[in-house]
Length: 456
Image (cartoon, rainbow, N blue to C red; front, side, top):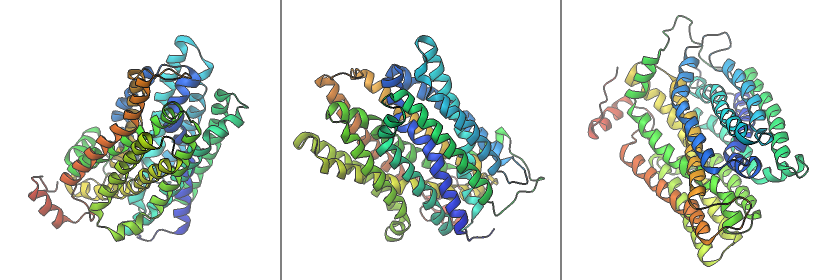
């Protein structure tokens, strides 16, 4: 395998993430708001559907990883599925943001079906996209350099949607939010499809798999996931971190609109968050050189907790302080940028470790976990937001009671703090691939902490 990744490959792979995350950012930032305040669905129902869809993904995502790993074509095993998945997901994205055109029982059925289909079709594209990384270079340093590009452009997409999304929606819909969301979805779908064909043309695997290579079956997939203890640790650490991050994002629009009575602060918060996350991704290689790898996760979680402290201080002592809100947003999102880059590098290490443990090099199966984690974190966050809004007595488009405001504050500040602390505890106690995969070091560490470390 060639270790050097060309600039053309890096740029094309990164630009593809711009289109890809333009397509998913509205889902994670605005879909709950769209469903409650535009389509008129109940928050509790939406949260339940979000969670139910991820239970389906727990089965379909690893299966898609198996399908990708079993693909043999002259275009490789990743690019065909990236194009197919993008085309399907683009259509479903447009359909999803037509939910507001339904009423009554059909509204609930349509919303549930469209959201589940969105998750399934996004899987088809996202898993092969991220699974390409180990196939583009065997060098950990090259992987780290490559990861900056998609994470950088992804952060840019989230920045644009988070900061200017509501303004763009208002202009595209001429004041009608429903039509604004629908028109934005159509515009994004075009950019999304263009980005997929950019990858198909310019990003090629360094290793082509022989058509006679042994294929995976469902039993192999189960064994791969079961035998990789470091994958389980990574899942636990990432999931708790990202659920906390999704809770931040999910409650923010309600928190600033109803607890602080200033919806414009949401745009400020998202703008600073987007810039800070972008900087976190870009500076990740430099931060990784300055600090031991094992400390980066702790730094990211610590910054998120600091963010909660700043927001609490703002609420108690200087309500509506733009400076403290900006500082809180910057602290949290800079840590998110670090984690987004770090977790992808960690998964590539887990692929190498998994090959040692199971005898199978299963990039797509293992990277399917990343897609599943992103979606499950978003769904779990959405479920918590939906149920939380119902529990605290939230009423759309109305002045909230003091009890509801207090509930919004706890959900926005207190709950993410607890989850970040849990992520730190799991990571510190169990994760061992801080410096990449080294067979001798890993066997020593696994023996010390009671893990079984014999290869398949």
